[in-house]
Length: 381
Ligand SMILES: Cc1ncc(COP(=O)(O)O)c(C=O)c1O
Image 1 (spheres, rainbow, N blue to C red):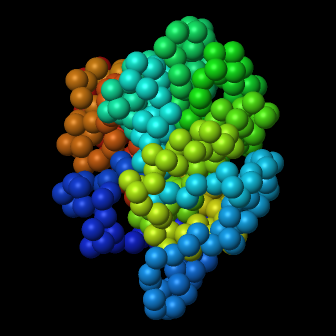
Image 2: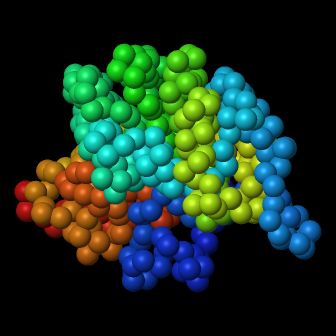
Protein backbone atom coordinates (compact mmCIF):
# COMPACT_ATOMS: atom_id res chain seq x y z
CA UNK A 1 0.00 0.00 0.00
CA UNK A 2 1.50 3.34 -1.06
CA UNK A 3 0.98 5.86 1.70
CA UNK A 4 3.54 8.45 0.58
CA UNK A 5 0.79 10.93 -0.35
CA UNK A 6 0.63 11.79 3.35
CA UNK A 7 4.31 12.84 3.30
CA UNK A 8 3.41 15.90 1.25
CA UNK A 9 4.15 19.03 3.29
CA UNK A 10 1.38 21.61 2.88
CA UNK A 11 1.91 25.16 4.07
CA UNK A 12 -1.24 25.89 6.09
CA UNK A 13 0.03 29.15 7.56
CA UNK A 14 -1.66 31.13 4.77
CA UNK A 15 -5.01 29.31 5.10
CA UNK A 16 -6.40 30.93 8.28
CA UNK A 17 -5.84 27.56 9.90
CA UNK A 18 -6.92 27.41 13.56
CA UNK A 19 -4.11 24.93 14.14
CA UNK A 20 -1.30 26.70 12.30
CA UNK A 21 -2.14 30.31 13.01
CA UNK A 22 -2.33 30.09 16.79
CA UNK A 23 1.38 30.13 17.61
CA UNK A 24 4.42 31.99 16.23
CA UNK A 25 5.83 30.37 13.08
CA UNK A 26 8.75 28.72 14.94
CA UNK A 27 6.33 26.58 17.00
CA UNK A 28 5.20 23.22 15.57
CA UNK A 29 1.44 23.00 16.23
CA UNK A 30 0.38 19.56 17.47
CA UNK A 31 -2.83 20.50 19.26
CA UNK A 32 -6.42 20.73 17.92
CA UNK A 33 -7.75 17.49 16.36
CA UNK A 34 -7.23 18.44 12.74
CA UNK A 35 -4.79 16.71 10.37
CA UNK A 36 -2.29 18.33 8.01
CA UNK A 37 -3.27 16.14 5.06
CA UNK A 38 -4.86 17.03 1.77
CA UNK A 39 -8.55 16.07 1.56
CA UNK A 40 -9.36 12.89 -0.37
CA UNK A 41 -9.90 13.46 -4.10
CA UNK A 42 -13.44 12.04 -3.94
CA UNK A 43 -14.42 14.76 -1.47
CA UNK A 44 -12.76 17.59 -3.39
CA UNK A 45 -14.48 16.43 -6.60
CA UNK A 46 -17.89 16.21 -4.93
CA UNK A 47 -17.57 19.73 -3.54
CA UNK A 48 -16.32 21.11 -6.86
CA UNK A 49 -19.22 19.47 -8.67
CA UNK A 50 -21.70 21.02 -6.27
CA UNK A 51 -20.11 24.49 -6.57
CA UNK A 52 -20.20 24.24 -10.37
CA UNK A 53 -23.96 23.80 -10.21
CA UNK A 54 -23.80 27.49 -9.42
CA UNK A 55 -26.92 28.07 -7.36
CA UNK A 56 -26.15 27.58 -3.69
CA UNK A 57 -29.55 28.21 -2.11
CA UNK A 58 -31.37 26.44 0.74
CA UNK A 59 -30.87 22.74 0.28
CA UNK A 60 -32.80 19.64 1.36
CA UNK A 61 -31.00 16.66 2.88
CA UNK A 62 -30.40 14.40 -0.14
CA UNK A 63 -32.12 11.01 0.16
CA UNK A 64 -28.89 9.57 -1.23
CA UNK A 65 -27.00 10.82 1.87
CA UNK A 66 -29.43 9.01 4.17
CA UNK A 67 -28.98 5.84 2.12
CA UNK A 68 -25.19 6.21 2.17
CA UNK A 69 -25.08 6.66 5.97
CA UNK A 70 -27.41 3.71 6.52
CA UNK A 71 -25.22 1.57 4.26
CA UNK A 72 -22.06 2.75 6.02
CA UNK A 73 -23.46 1.94 9.49
CA UNK A 74 -24.48 -1.49 8.26
CA UNK A 75 -21.18 -2.28 6.53
CA UNK A 76 -18.80 -0.80 9.07
CA UNK A 77 -20.51 -1.60 12.39
CA UNK A 78 -23.23 -4.19 11.52
CA UNK A 79 -25.69 -1.61 12.80
CA UNK A 80 -29.17 -1.17 11.34
CA UNK A 81 -30.21 2.46 11.24
CA UNK A 82 -33.47 3.78 9.75
CA UNK A 83 -33.69 7.01 7.75
CA UNK A 84 -36.25 8.53 10.14
CA UNK A 85 -33.79 8.11 13.05
CA UNK A 86 -31.20 10.36 11.42
CA UNK A 87 -30.76 14.03 12.30
CA UNK A 88 -28.28 16.03 10.25
CA UNK A 89 -26.33 18.72 12.08
CA UNK A 90 -23.76 21.44 11.39
CA UNK A 91 -21.32 19.91 13.91
CA UNK A 92 -21.09 17.51 16.77
CA UNK A 93 -20.31 19.82 19.69
CA UNK A 94 -23.66 21.61 19.39
CA UNK A 95 -25.36 18.21 19.62
CA UNK A 96 -23.59 17.40 22.91
CA UNK A 97 -24.80 20.65 24.44
CA UNK A 98 -28.25 20.31 22.90
CA UNK A 99 -28.70 16.75 24.20
CA UNK A 100 -27.96 17.84 27.77
CA UNK A 101 -30.25 20.87 27.57
CA UNK A 102 -33.10 19.07 25.83
CA UNK A 103 -33.07 15.76 27.68
CA UNK A 104 -32.13 16.60 31.28
CA UNK A 105 -33.45 19.08 33.85
CA UNK A 106 -31.88 21.43 36.36
CA UNK A 107 -31.23 19.05 39.27
CA UNK A 108 -30.26 16.07 37.13
CA UNK A 109 -26.78 14.57 37.19
CA UNK A 110 -24.80 13.86 34.05
CA UNK A 111 -22.12 11.18 34.42
CA UNK A 112 -18.98 11.64 32.33
CA UNK A 113 -15.96 9.31 32.36
CA UNK A 114 -12.80 11.36 32.00
CA UNK A 115 -10.31 12.97 31.41
CA UNK A 116 -12.23 13.56 28.23
CA UNK A 117 -12.76 15.93 25.30
CA UNK A 118 -13.80 19.05 27.15
CA UNK A 119 -17.23 19.60 25.58
CA UNK A 120 -18.55 16.45 27.26
CA UNK A 121 -18.00 18.08 30.65
CA UNK A 122 -18.69 21.61 29.50
CA UNK A 123 -22.16 20.63 28.24
CA UNK A 124 -23.55 19.81 31.72
CA UNK A 125 -21.56 22.62 33.33
CA UNK A 126 -22.87 25.33 31.01
CA UNK A 127 -26.41 23.98 31.33
CA UNK A 128 -26.08 24.15 35.12
CA UNK A 129 -26.59 20.40 35.61
CA UNK A 130 -24.69 18.34 38.20
CA UNK A 131 -21.56 16.87 36.67
CA UNK A 132 -20.24 13.56 38.03
CA UNK A 133 -16.80 12.80 36.61
CA UNK A 134 -15.78 9.15 36.69
CA UNK A 135 -12.01 8.60 36.51
CA UNK A 136 -10.51 6.46 33.79
CA UNK A 137 -7.94 4.02 35.12
CA UNK A 138 -5.22 2.00 33.42
CA UNK A 139 -5.91 -1.73 33.13
CA UNK A 140 -3.93 -4.08 30.87
CA UNK A 141 -2.34 -1.10 29.17
CA UNK A 142 -5.66 0.55 28.31
CA UNK A 143 -7.57 3.48 29.73
CA UNK A 144 -10.86 2.06 31.01
CA UNK A 145 -13.74 3.30 33.15
CA UNK A 146 -13.58 2.67 36.89
CA UNK A 147 -16.55 0.32 37.08
CA UNK A 148 -17.21 0.60 40.80
CA UNK A 149 -17.32 4.38 40.60
CA UNK A 150 -19.55 4.26 37.54
CA UNK A 151 -21.93 1.89 39.29
CA UNK A 152 -22.13 4.13 42.36
CA UNK A 153 -22.74 7.22 40.23
CA UNK A 154 -25.48 5.52 38.21
CA UNK A 155 -27.26 4.49 41.42
CA UNK A 156 -27.61 8.11 42.54
CA UNK A 157 -31.22 9.34 42.64
CA UNK A 158 -30.43 12.34 40.47
CA UNK A 159 -28.50 10.42 37.76
CA UNK A 160 -30.11 10.98 34.36
CA UNK A 161 -27.51 10.69 31.62
CA UNK A 162 -24.15 9.07 30.80
CA UNK A 163 -21.95 10.80 28.24
CA UNK A 164 -19.47 8.51 26.55
CA UNK A 165 -16.67 9.21 24.13
CA UNK A 166 -16.00 6.05 22.12
CA UNK A 167 -13.31 5.77 20.84
CA UNK A 168 -12.05 7.84 23.69
CA UNK A 169 -10.43 11.22 23.21
CA UNK A 170 -7.81 11.67 24.66
CA UNK A 171 -7.09 8.12 25.94
CA UNK A 172 -7.52 6.38 22.58
CA UNK A 173 -9.59 3.52 24.05
CA UNK A 174 -11.82 1.49 21.76
CA UNK A 175 -14.46 0.19 24.16
CA UNK A 176 -15.01 -3.54 23.78
CA UNK A 177 -18.49 -4.96 23.33
CA UNK A 178 -18.41 -6.48 26.84
CA UNK A 179 -17.43 -3.15 28.38
CA UNK A 180 -20.25 -1.41 26.57
CA UNK A 181 -22.66 -4.12 27.69
CA UNK A 182 -21.78 -3.38 31.32
CA UNK A 183 -22.33 0.35 30.79
CA UNK A 184 -25.62 -0.34 29.07
CA UNK A 185 -26.73 -2.71 31.86
CA UNK A 186 -26.24 0.10 34.39
CA UNK A 187 -28.07 2.56 32.17
CA UNK A 188 -30.96 0.11 31.82
CA UNK A 189 -31.08 -0.67 35.54
CA UNK A 190 -31.21 3.01 36.50
CA UNK A 191 -33.12 4.22 33.46
CA UNK A 192 -30.43 6.57 32.16
CA UNK A 193 -30.08 8.19 28.76
CA UNK A 194 -26.78 7.54 26.97
CA UNK A 195 -25.15 10.15 24.76
CA UNK A 196 -22.34 8.54 22.81
CA UNK A 197 -19.85 10.73 20.94
CA UNK A 198 -18.41 8.37 18.31
CA UNK A 199 -16.71 10.97 16.11
CA UNK A 200 -13.41 9.00 16.08
CA UNK A 201 -14.99 5.62 15.26
CA UNK A 202 -13.47 5.28 11.77
CA UNK A 203 -9.97 5.94 13.07
CA UNK A 204 -9.21 2.61 14.74
CA UNK A 205 -5.49 1.82 14.53
CA UNK A 206 -5.40 -1.53 16.33
CA UNK A 207 -7.10 -4.66 15.09
CA UNK A 208 -10.39 -3.87 16.84
CA UNK A 209 -13.98 -3.39 15.78
CA UNK A 210 -15.98 -0.28 16.66
CA UNK A 211 -19.26 -1.10 18.40
CA UNK A 212 -21.83 1.68 18.60
CA UNK A 213 -23.37 1.26 22.05
CA UNK A 214 -26.80 1.76 20.44
CA UNK A 215 -26.22 -1.36 18.33
CA UNK A 216 -25.97 -3.71 21.34
CA UNK A 217 -29.68 -4.47 21.65
CA UNK A 218 -33.08 -2.81 21.36
CA UNK A 219 -33.02 -1.31 24.85
CA UNK A 220 -29.63 0.31 24.16
CA UNK A 221 -30.98 1.65 20.87
CA UNK A 222 -33.99 3.15 22.66
CA UNK A 223 -31.98 5.04 25.27
CA UNK A 224 -29.03 6.26 23.19
CA UNK A 225 -28.25 9.37 21.20
CA UNK A 226 -25.34 8.40 18.92
CA UNK A 227 -23.27 11.20 17.41
CA UNK A 228 -21.01 10.61 14.42
CA UNK A 229 -19.30 12.61 11.69
CA UNK A 230 -16.84 12.10 8.84
CA UNK A 231 -15.02 15.26 9.95
CA UNK A 232 -12.11 13.76 11.94
CA UNK A 233 -11.47 10.75 9.70
CA UNK A 234 -11.62 12.58 6.39
CA UNK A 235 -10.22 15.85 7.75
CA UNK A 236 -13.20 17.98 6.77
CA UNK A 237 -13.94 19.68 10.11
CA UNK A 238 -14.07 23.06 8.38
CA UNK A 239 -17.12 21.94 6.41
CA UNK A 240 -19.23 21.59 9.56
CA UNK A 241 -21.25 18.40 9.33
CA UNK A 242 -22.28 15.68 11.79
CA UNK A 243 -25.29 13.45 12.32
CA UNK A 244 -27.22 12.00 15.23
CA UNK A 245 -29.00 8.66 15.34
CA UNK A 246 -31.93 8.64 17.76
CA UNK A 247 -34.19 5.59 17.56
CA UNK A 248 -36.48 6.54 20.44
CA UNK A 249 -39.39 8.63 19.11
CA UNK A 250 -39.82 10.66 22.29
CA UNK A 251 -36.10 11.46 22.71
CA UNK A 252 -35.86 12.35 19.02
CA UNK A 253 -38.87 14.63 19.30
CA UNK A 254 -37.42 16.41 22.36
CA UNK A 255 -34.01 16.76 20.70
CA UNK A 256 -35.58 18.04 17.46
CA UNK A 257 -37.85 20.51 19.24
CA UNK A 258 -34.83 22.02 21.01
CA UNK A 259 -32.84 22.04 17.76
CA UNK A 260 -35.35 23.65 15.42
CA UNK A 261 -34.71 27.31 14.69
CA UNK A 262 -31.73 27.34 17.09
CA UNK A 263 -29.25 25.06 15.33
CA UNK A 264 -29.04 25.73 11.59
CA UNK A 265 -29.20 23.03 8.94
CA UNK A 266 -25.83 21.73 7.76
CA UNK A 267 -24.41 23.57 4.77
CA UNK A 268 -24.66 21.97 1.36
CA UNK A 269 -20.92 21.43 0.92
CA UNK A 270 -20.77 19.51 4.20
CA UNK A 271 -23.56 17.27 2.92
CA UNK A 272 -21.74 16.64 -0.37
CA UNK A 273 -18.49 15.88 1.46
CA UNK A 274 -20.15 13.44 3.86
CA UNK A 275 -21.78 11.48 1.08
CA UNK A 276 -18.56 11.29 -0.92
CA UNK A 277 -16.53 10.27 2.14
CA UNK A 278 -18.76 7.37 3.11
CA UNK A 279 -19.38 6.27 -0.47
CA UNK A 280 -15.92 6.58 -2.01
CA UNK A 281 -13.42 7.36 0.76
CA UNK A 282 -12.67 3.87 2.06
CA UNK A 283 -9.39 3.28 0.20
CA UNK A 284 -8.07 6.69 1.26
CA UNK A 285 -9.09 5.91 4.84
CA UNK A 286 -7.20 2.60 4.76
CA UNK A 287 -4.06 4.38 3.57
CA UNK A 288 -4.50 7.03 6.25
CA UNK A 289 -4.76 4.37 8.97
CA UNK A 290 -1.49 2.84 7.68
CA UNK A 291 0.22 6.23 7.88
CA UNK A 292 -1.12 7.00 11.38
CA UNK A 293 0.04 3.59 12.62
CA UNK A 294 3.56 4.43 11.47
CA UNK A 295 3.36 7.82 13.18
CA UNK A 296 2.24 6.16 16.39
CA UNK A 297 5.36 3.93 16.17
CA UNK A 298 7.57 7.00 15.77
CA UNK A 299 6.18 8.38 19.03
CA UNK A 300 6.52 5.05 20.83
CA UNK A 301 10.16 4.72 19.75
CA UNK A 302 10.94 8.29 20.67
CA UNK A 303 9.50 7.83 24.17
CA UNK A 304 11.08 4.42 24.77
CA UNK A 305 13.53 5.51 27.48
CA UNK A 306 11.85 8.78 28.28
CA UNK A 307 10.24 9.87 31.56
CA UNK A 308 7.25 10.73 29.38
CA UNK A 309 4.89 7.73 29.49
CA UNK A 310 2.23 6.85 26.98
CA UNK A 311 -0.46 4.20 26.73
CA UNK A 312 -0.62 3.40 23.03
CA UNK A 313 -3.79 4.87 21.49
CA UNK A 314 -5.97 2.09 20.06
CA UNK A 315 -7.70 4.72 17.96
CA UNK A 316 -7.54 8.42 16.97
CA UNK A 317 -4.44 10.38 15.97
CA UNK A 318 -4.06 11.72 19.49
CA UNK A 319 -1.43 10.58 21.98
CA UNK A 320 -2.22 11.05 25.66
CA UNK A 321 1.14 11.39 27.38
CA UNK A 322 1.87 11.36 31.10
CA UNK A 323 4.43 14.04 31.95
CA UNK A 324 4.18 13.73 35.73
CA UNK A 325 7.72 12.31 36.07
CA UNK A 326 9.07 15.63 34.80
CA UNK A 327 7.70 17.34 37.95
CA UNK A 328 6.72 20.46 36.07
CA UNK A 329 4.00 22.89 37.13
CA UNK A 330 2.87 23.29 33.54
CA UNK A 331 4.15 20.71 31.02
CA UNK A 332 2.14 22.40 28.26
CA UNK A 333 4.04 25.69 28.71
CA UNK A 334 7.39 23.89 29.02
CA UNK A 335 6.97 22.21 25.63
CA UNK A 336 5.56 25.35 24.06
CA UNK A 337 8.74 27.17 25.07
CA UNK A 338 10.66 24.29 23.45
CA UNK A 339 8.80 24.99 20.20
CA UNK A 340 6.01 22.37 20.28
CA UNK A 341 2.41 23.54 20.62
CA UNK A 342 0.64 20.53 22.10
CA UNK A 343 -2.73 20.49 23.91
CA UNK A 344 -2.64 21.06 27.65
CA UNK A 345 -3.86 18.04 29.61
CA UNK A 346 -5.65 20.49 31.92
CA UNK A 347 -8.16 21.13 29.13
CA UNK A 348 -9.26 17.50 29.40
CA UNK A 349 -9.01 17.16 33.18
CA UNK A 350 -5.37 16.34 34.08
CA UNK A 351 -2.71 19.05 33.99
CA UNK A 352 0.17 16.54 34.31
CA UNK A 353 -0.65 15.13 30.88
CA UNK A 354 -0.20 16.50 27.40
CA UNK A 355 -2.13 15.53 24.26
CA UNK A 356 -0.14 15.33 21.08
CA UNK A 357 -1.80 15.29 17.66
CA UNK A 358 0.08 12.98 15.29
CA UNK A 359 -2.14 13.65 12.28
CA UNK A 360 0.76 15.29 10.51
CA UNK A 361 3.59 14.41 8.15
CA UNK A 362 6.29 12.08 9.38
CA UNK A 363 8.85 14.88 8.96
CA UNK A 364 6.83 17.26 11.16
CA UNK A 365 6.34 14.57 13.77
CA UNK A 366 10.03 13.62 13.85
CA UNK A 367 11.01 17.25 14.26
CA UNK A 368 8.52 17.73 17.09
CA UNK A 369 9.64 14.55 18.87
CA UNK A 370 13.26 15.70 18.58
CA UNK A 371 12.38 19.02 20.21
CA UNK A 372 10.46 17.20 22.95
CA UNK A 373 13.39 14.83 23.67
CA UNK A 374 15.90 17.67 23.70
CA UNK A 375 13.72 19.71 26.06
CA UNK A 376 13.31 16.74 28.40
CA UNK A 377 17.07 16.11 28.39
CA UNK A 378 17.69 19.64 29.73
CA UNK A 379 15.77 18.85 32.93
CA UNK A 380 17.68 17.75 36.01
CA UNK A 381 16.29 14.44 37.29
C1 LIG B 1 -14.67 13.66 20.80
C2 LIG B 1 -14.92 14.87 19.94
N1 LIG B 1 -16.19 15.29 19.75
C3 LIG B 1 -16.47 16.37 18.99
C4 LIG B 1 -15.45 17.08 18.37
C5 LIG B 1 -15.76 18.28 17.51
O1 LIG B 1 -16.87 18.10 16.72
P1 LIG B 1 -17.37 19.25 15.73
O2 LIG B 1 -16.17 19.91 15.15
O3 LIG B 1 -18.17 18.51 14.72
O4 LIG B 1 -18.23 20.18 16.53
C6 LIG B 1 -14.12 16.68 18.55
C7 LIG B 1 -13.04 17.46 17.95
O5 LIG B 1 -11.89 17.30 18.26
C8 LIG B 1 -13.86 15.54 19.34
O6 LIG B 1 -12.61 15.08 19.51
